[in-house]
Length: 196
Image (cartoon, rainbow, N blue to C red; front, side, top):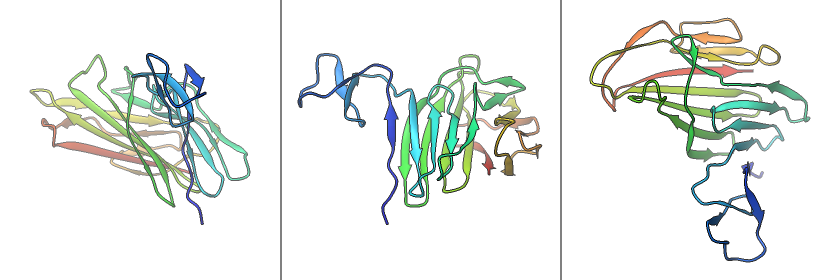
C-alpha cells in the first residue's frame, strides 16, 4: 500500500536545470524554481484511491474535486467562507500540510483586513470519498466580538452531510448562530462540515 502525494502549482516558476537556484528564486516541491517568499496558488490533495482535490490558497476553498474514476464532483468559484453574512475578506496563507494513509490535509490562516484581530483558520481535508472543512475562529481583540460564520459549497455536486458547531445546514450552506466570540489567543471556537 502506498500513500498519496501532494502536487503543487505555482504562478511563476522555472524548471530546475541544475542544483543552484537563480537569484531571487528557490526550489519548489514540484521540481521547479519559484520566487522566494511566494506562496503556491493551489495545493493538490491526493488520496491513494486516485481521488484528488485542488484547493485555492487565496480563499482556502476546494475549487475542484474528482473521485477515483476521474469524474468531476465539484467545481467552485469564489470563497466558501462567510462572516456575518458577507464573504470573508483577505487572503489566506498556507500554514501546514498533514498527509496520512487515509487523508490529505492543508491548513490555512487569514486575518481579514476588516477584522485584523480575528484569526480564521481552515483545515481542508480530503479523504477517499469525502471532503471536510474544519474552521477555527480565534478572537484576539480586547473585547468580545459578535460573529456568525457560514460555509458555502457549490450547489451542483456533493452536499454538506454533517456539521458540528454550525446550527443549521441545507446541503449547500452551513450557518452558525450569531455568538459572542471569547477573547484570547487560546480561546477558540470550532466548526466542522463534511461534504459527500
